[in-house]
Amino acid sequence: MTKYTDQGKQDTRSGYGAGMTELGRTNPNVVSLCADLVGSLKIDTFIEENPERFFQVGIAEANMMGIAAGLTIGGKIPFASTFANFATGRVYDQIRQSIAYSGKNVKICASHAGLTLGEDGATHQILEDIGLMKMLPGMTVINPCDFNQTKAATIAIAEHHGPVYLRFGRPKVANFTPVDQKFEIGKALMLNEGTDVTILATGHLVWQSLLAAETLESQGISAEVINIHTIKPLDDKAILDSVKKTGCVVTAEEHNYLGGLGESVARVLASHHPTPQEFVATQDTFGESGTPEQLMEKYGLNNKAIEKAVLKVLKRK
Image 1: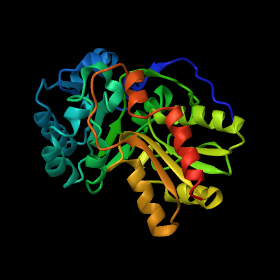
Image 2: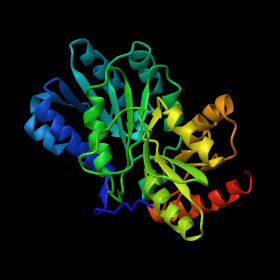
Image 3: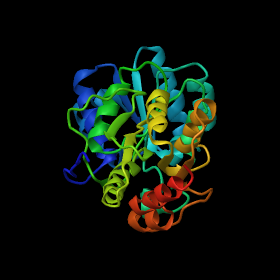
């Protein structure tokens, strides 16, 4: 098994901040908008170095999306950032009508997604955002797994023309991907080759999948782990090539099983290669207040839950 090492825990939102700093220095068309959450989004350095390219909109997220759409008309590349709950659910109409419908080149950058927002509780822990965004025609949806990949994704989406939803989180998690790894939108990454089961993971669940694969290997189970950092467009070929070899699949995500990665994978399998599948995701429920670790344990979103799902799906082959 290929060994990935935790290079030191870092928060993915800081990866976004690092990517924005680099874009501030290399792409003069990139501008930043924020809804009164500069510190939480880690964009302080971008603002310090490019004060004329930053717009503090305040707690007016719908207005922020409208301003961002307007800025694209003049050739700017706006990165509009706030918490995931406010970046999607609160402003869905503005995104649909002003950004997606007209294909505006807006990058919607959403921090504090999922259960790992932690103690702020269910009102802030959005678990429906991937579904909301992937249903919008023309919207690219990206959910990177660690600091390095979030930085690379932030830089990459500036070169992609069209609306993008970039999702990342609050807590410090394992940083394990290569610092110089090229980020290709829509191109899944093989992390560990296997023959018995395919694990398709996104976001914080990628590292948990690698931990699960290591434990499963000790039990004589060969797990193939693939990082699905782009939910839309989905890498159908990588998914199908893998499941045709292994014969079963587990999807793992910090999101509701309704509308997330798992459903997108199920669509591909139903259309091209029906395959036994198990879902590691929240089960049509809201979250609650607690530490990220407590919540991931309670709602079944960790390496132990992935191992359990693998053992279950293997019996269905």
